[in-house]
Image 1 (cartoon, rainbow, N blue to C red):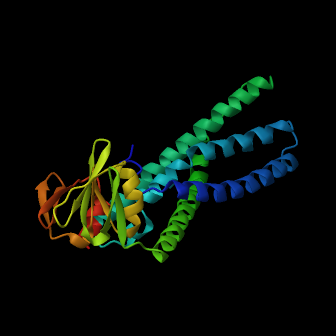
Image 2: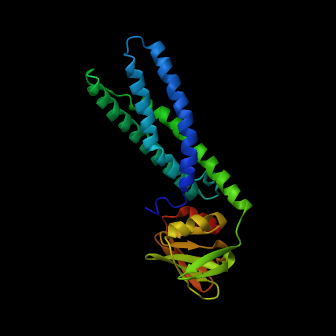
Image 3: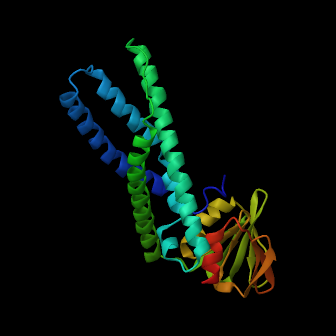
Length: 269
């Protein structure tokens, strides 16, 4: 799961989600009132069920554009590499379909249940998926734009207080290490192992995802599900076949998986 959510900050989901939920709630209220006025033959409760079920479906699916926005940020469109741009299109193409399918599936189930409870007969969705999908594309574009914006604000705030060292808790002691002296960080079971420029390899009890959340804002790159590397200490990149690479970090070599194309672009740059 950590490799799936790599680069995605949960605070972005919380802040962006609250903003989007507030906007969606206003739109939902307006739609309910408008439908009451425009659809005289519908029961008063039906527009409420239609709109609230759609809102709940939106909430259930909002994590998809959040993840996609993190895995394929907007700057990939401006990349010089066609593989990066293709990755961007593939990620968001798959994400918008997944978002729409989950959104529609949730509100269909909720509407069917509501109609049973209200003893109004079966709810029929019909062949309206393409209609809903076109609307979901616009909503998805709004979502990823908000998540990109929230992430950019977060990064700018962190840059203002950019740290110059990192505290490694090795057992009962704390080792304060300049960031530039950290070549890489590797997962080691329930620990992470820091590879330092002086050859030391202190261990700290933590997950790689937790360390990544602190080091990614200062430039470290997730090159593999088990590795973070410091681009400022990179001395070479060597292809090893099947799209994988080896990152030279002076005396250390770290893997670069083909599953992290954005990392390759950053290291090449």
